[in-house]
Length: 459
Image (cartoon, rainbow, N blue to C red; front, side, top):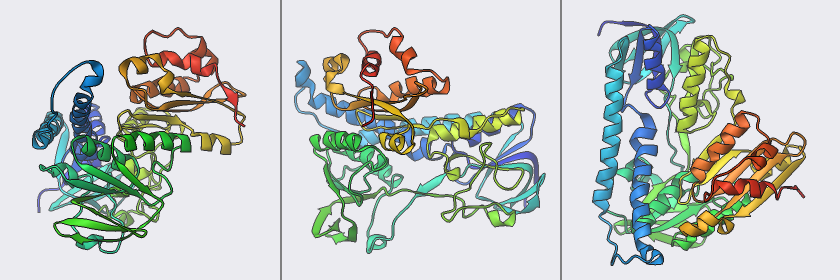
């Protein structure tokens, strides 16, 4: 067995929080072990944000090329080299991961330990971890092991070849007809991308509508956008059976049989905590294996923290990275809490959906007096000039404090404009302040004061 490694801090998992926290602690003079069984960068770098947003750009170029005549440009027949688009995507992933590896390797005091890490015992200030043949002793342990695709127990699914968000990105031949089980963010993003790259796409969602956590008017706008591009969306019926159909796959959905060449399962995520041996030190989990924490991201065991997707405080790259900032600030004597942040996220369809704070449904259920305004993107001048008029904007304001409660926007630039509201809400800014501020013309965001002038009490 290899010689035991003695460190101040051990970080299990090299996703978005892990490497940043590990290098920061090492730069403060600690001896740090970063434990990773697979690839540095986690889901985001390897099969999430980095590859999908790179591929999204190829899909958008193809989409805009097909629309070129609308802008007075003639390009002829548009042909997609799918393998070249995927190779471009992989090159970006490889560059991002190699940069991360160089950063970690070049940090004094930081040791990268390859393998699955799990507790074998210990108490506060003296935790023992086993990583393959190597023992690691640490005063503090930070868990950042992320999640993996959840594959539901649909009859026949285990016997039929199917794709997840990870294996989908390994394809080098374009699917003829991609079937997608799951009408949430991953399924819809990838559905639109593959449709624009030339595949036929059918999305099957068991719930009555796609994007079920969004307000109904937002869902309607997303549905219309995707259907206009040729995606078929089937909702409100469970998938009763999956079976082979020649060299493809067939789904029984209600009374209908739907056949395709490939199947993507995008039905949620499971936490990677089962190999951590958390019972050895008494760390509590919920029924699905997620690790509850307080606002400081501390578990029930002193000296052990949980960061990123496994703590159920937002399954996003940005929340994971923000977790590391909270932990690091408190390590330095601060008093930051994840309870204080306003949740924000984007769905990277094209145009994207940007969301901050409450939805209309949540605002109605909150018991507050709320004012709301909605505005169609077809009435935004810049959107009309760009011929990008799909979508809407919705603003929610507390009638008593004049502070923002929520923002939803499906439209051009929504993934960037949402930061106007994350910053405003973090600073306690009022709707009146935004309404009276000077915007630049011609922009999409210049319409925010106009929209605020239309606020009305929720009926």
